[in-house]
Image 1 (cartoon, rainbow, N blue to C red):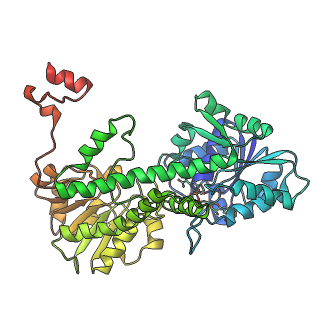
Image 2: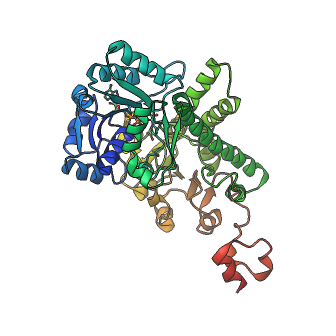
Image 3: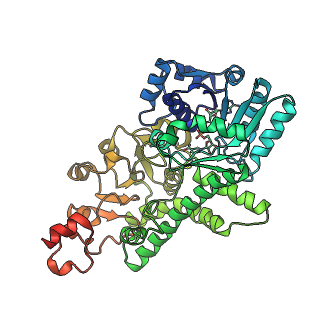
Length: 465
Ligand SMILES: NC(=O)c1ccc[n+]([C@@H]2O[C@H](COP(=O)([O-])OP(=O)(O)OC[C@H]3O[C@@H](n4cnc5c(N)ncnc54)[C@H](O)[C@@H]3O)[C@@H](O)[C@H]2O)c1
């Protein structure tokens, strides 16, 4: 298949490179000439693990090319994917579809022979109808079909997610389009990834519903975490206790500083707007967005409380700025409202992030950016773990204590154990855990009388023997 991928961002670039890796010939188009130039030179405009090598291999073998010339790429393509941004529209929160519609116009002008135009961008219900109308208006003679094929990859594990998806959703009732999409995704179909063929509007709604549901799950456990703190329970044990129920599942039940990123916040709001416009309000999702918004800034209060009620003039060190590990994406990162709130209260903020500091500099000012976690902790009155990068999971606690002004750890991702940190002389605050309570039950130390609710499998066998 010959594929044109419009937009070389987190989705377009990864999808384009993966399609090329399947053996298709892919032209990735972006209107940002600098981005294209750096991609041609082998420099990735975003950080995504293993992407550089994947791009280098497929470019080197002649299956993957980068260009600003949309018309040329579209003219020879069997399938044209639209993977441009759909940010929140200023003022009302609806998805800004101008990039999608502009690319639809440009695509229309270049169509040559039967072509399938596929929206991979996350777009509200009915956008496919409008894309179809725009193309038909621009080129009444064109032979084409418009399909919705939402993308579910996650930044940080995007290549793996793209190559091993839980499902592929294809929204169309056009038989020729189905054939093309089946061929495009054939390598994954061989991996037994289910393809779900649905009506186009349904496909569009599946993507928003999935994101809204996941955002709801995160927000639910965050509220339970608040309750845990008030009543002296441990949210991680609650999450495990409910997550082992197959109907609930253990994923997305990690309490933290609130969801961020380039998708959940804007998609939840856009879905709410669509629902309101159609007189079918989604009260649960509305509440999720409201709760999450207040939570991010409320994390600053946690830090203030850990420092005894005031942070004016204090030095606070933040580890992790991106909205999650293994990406450089700062869009809607919880670190942003946290830092601005701390600065508003008079704190001096130091920060370190393995990949996100270039992006962070564009959105956060008056922050001292550091060379590593220990440099960041130097002279700090508190250390705050905001994003759980691997390299923050096993810090040298003694070294931290030596360089910090005060041994205070605010762990917004529950990476460390409260009892361990306290034994090592730290004042510790986690999320949804009461710092002073007894250590969590450790089954590896269990005595025979502890076996009323034994853990599963090998560990249980070991204890019983
Ligand atoms: N980032 C994610 O994890 C993720 C996951 C699933 C779905 N999505 C959705 O995918 C879409 C793209 O997201 P992203 O994060 O890749 O965006 P992005 O902002 O990283 O990239 C978009 C790219 O499109 C380019 N572009 C815009 N208009 C263009 C045009 N007319 N012609 C050529 N290029 C154009 C921009 O220059 C930019 O490089 C969004 O709708 C998003 O909601 C994102």
